[in-house]
Amino acid sequence: MKKMSCIIVEDEPIARKILREFIEQIDYLDLAGEFESAIKAEAFLRNNETDIMFLDIEMPKMTGLDFLRTCQVKPLVILTTAYSEYALEGYALNVIDYLLKPISFARFMKAIQKARSFIKIKKQANEVTGSDFLFVRSEKKIEKIKLSEILFIESTGNYVSIVFPNKKLVAYLTLKGLRTQLPKDIFLMIHRSYLVNFSKIESLENNHVKVGGINLPLGRAYASEVMKVIEERMLRR
Image 1 (cartoon, rainbow, N blue to C red):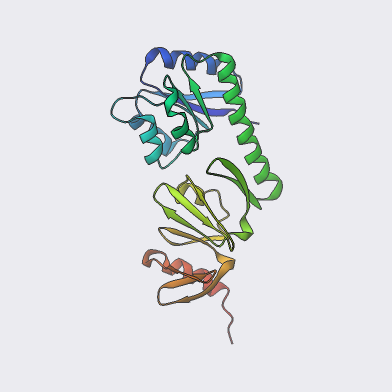
Image 2 (tube, one colour):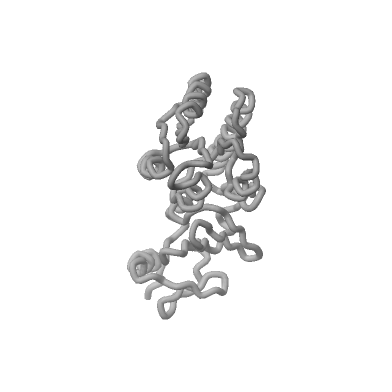
């Protein structure tokens, strides 16, 4: 398994130094950057693939929790804070672990091993099955989902609803980020808020796409691409 790329987002120099020294002791971690504010970290994340983010909560201008609510690209997050009262809210935002300051190296290692196991499972699932399924964190558990059973995915701000014939999962993900993990020959954007399983499309009429008996809007910017894919499967005389 290749090294895991990580960043530190922490406004206190001493706290950054401690985390940096911990990271340097683990040979499978690669420190890609240190940032004293969430704003600077967000700019980095937009252009650099990152596996783990060590994120402080109490920071000037934007707190770590506010950052998590608005950030479009999120690696696995390990919160680092002196305040235990934020733990429940942190887990609601799907952080992988929560470290209370002062952080011991033993507790730090436990968090890293937890993140490493999660990344390894996700990687193995994609390699062994040829992207037949993925793992999604929904509420307080991680669920395995079969891609072939998905009807469509709807974006609602910083959350997505993954809709199946008989259930719906809500996950703290962005549609943009999720789209990069799904096979492009199976899932098709029909609207800025909707990604559909192409094989589940039942009909197209009046700028709507029917999937699972539900009429979804067909966005003007996506119509030509959708019709192009449909034309390739069209029966002709």
